[in-house]
Image (cartoon, rainbow, N blue to C red; front, side, top):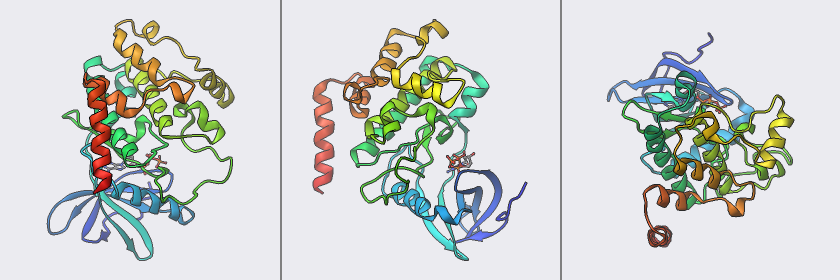
Length: 283
Ligand SMILES: Nc1ncnc2c1ncn2[C@@H]1O[C@H](COP(=O)(O)OP(=O)(O)OP(=O)(O)O)[C@@H](O)[C@H]1O
């Protein structure tokens, strides 16, 4: 394994362990030489991705939420951009589902509520994540959820990162409208529906033998009823999946409305949520 930055010191953080490599760079676990604070350091290894990397840092630093990994700093070390962020222990939801298959419904609800809370917070701040998938979500031993990856998130100041017609996101989790470059924050809600289905059944709702077959199924909203795979799924979960996997984004439930529903709140509270967002924006 090639681990070019292992043992290096980046802004006082000594890189102690290689965690993995993503589309843009290598991620290491690190420890601060004086404070002993643990961090994760992402080192850019594709110079053509520098705009995207900066965007990731910009988006991640502009939000503060208990279910979103905190960015500590953006550093340039010997000309190489690095992101120093909160280290999140635990497993990605992807590993958890691969290991366990369908997850217990009570646990799924706990995970879902935290995911939706984080996504509603992003949306309230004008951020569209665009790449929600189990590999970008970590769950700790205490069942705390953290969103990790903001590489292709879109905020108001995000530069145009993709070429015209280039599809952004991972196709299994993509909403129908994203194939036509018409994605919006509601496309994140579709991805939440796919993730919810996967957590409850251990299977993807739209999984064709080819990319085209997957796309056709997504565009038709053609998925097997989740209770045919897992008969223990409650009616409430099934209804939520239906509300999220609506082909027409106008008919899809928003993250804020879903959060209220999960918390058993009323439409009044939904209004209060919108009011608190408005107040935050005034300040
Ligand atoms: N803050 C973090 N704390 C702990 N582990 C992390 C953190 N950020 C990333 N990782 C881990 O590092 C590895 C690489 O992450 P990275 O986000 O670069 O890639 P990816 O999600 O696999 O791919 P891509 O960026 O292309 O979607 C993954 O195993 C990921 O779980």
